Image (cartoon, rainbow, N blue to C red):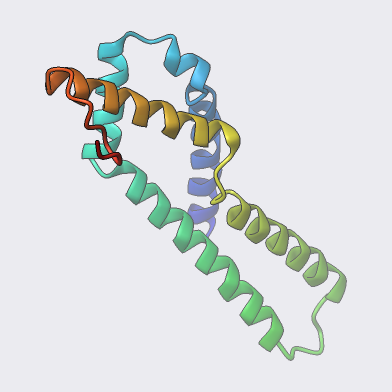
Length: 136
């Protein structure tokens, strides 16, 4: 179990470093080729799905802890410590649930990507007025 704690600690540090690189302003400052390469590697390799699976598994682990704590009938349990842990776990679950709601920045990003794809398709179709999601 200690190895798991070390892995989570290491992963948390790596995710903090990655968070800085994922700011839209950093991505926007990259060349179009670099932007395409980054998006292709994320989408084609299934990295986003793998990360989401790990987060879902972590959420499941936390729910299992809550179930275990609720079922624990040990008379020698330190209720203050258990209560504090349950508060922390509940807060983590709340944060994980709220993180699935897109922020305004994320929604703007999707809108920009959609507009870019629409423009590219229109260019490829020789100026045809047909756009993604729209009919003439």
